[in-house]
Length: 179
Image (tube, rainbow, N blue to C red):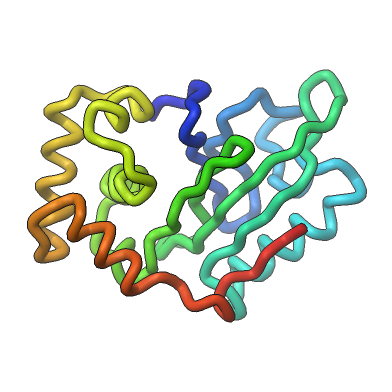
């Protein structure tokens, strides 16, 4: 999976112990936990979000915090995380001003991790050629994932996928917002 910069977001995965297994930016130390990436003032916020993801209160969180860069400076990060079936969490780091819909769990559980990435990007309004560039895949591979998504969800188009996601979006009470 490509981990380079994109104007549409960067994918992130965290194991059930809170250790970052995929992060799009240089990390400080070996196998750090997500909470360690945050500057000290934001660490309780990040730890709280990870506890909510690991437990029952929230299946997804929308979090903005400052993370510590390799050179010790701080940078603002907007992070959407969702609990994974196998433990841990997956999500996306978004650049300023870019939004993306987290797939409802009822849809996400039917798809592979790569199909979830493709479906999430489709919900932002991106077309196949743009998703190709974001995920560093061929256009045919993206189309194959889209065909598989449509088959698994019983739909026939990208527009129907967006409609399905909007119909099943996480209810506001289920989504916790950081500062």
